[in-house]
Image (cartoon, rainbow, N blue to C red; front, side, top):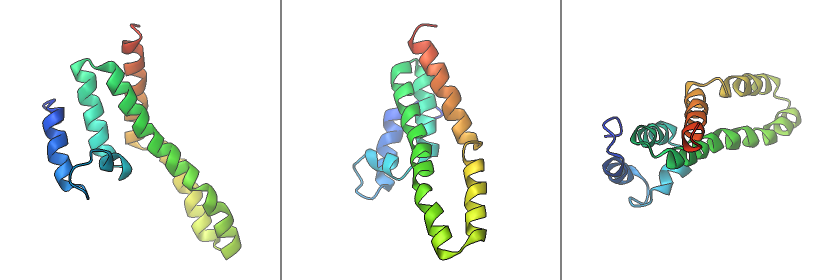
Length: 119
């Protein structure tokens, strides 16, 4: 539905699979990035660049939240003497911003901003 730019219908269908069955914000709270990214791209194709930019930034916030959540893990690994887990966490942090979704979100946000500003 999102690939055929039927965002409203896709939203109604997607909330059937959420916990409360009626709150579209649950998809954001669950960090369902594939759905959010597909709807963002649909808004962009429709020419609704302001909404697309807003949604792209909301998806980018997931990455910021993941990064922020990792700060507590530094002291935990040192306290529990878990160097293998700590090294794995550092590798994950290096990989996080090279994920394909992050690249799509960044490119989409830049394109939406440029189009919304008239550039």
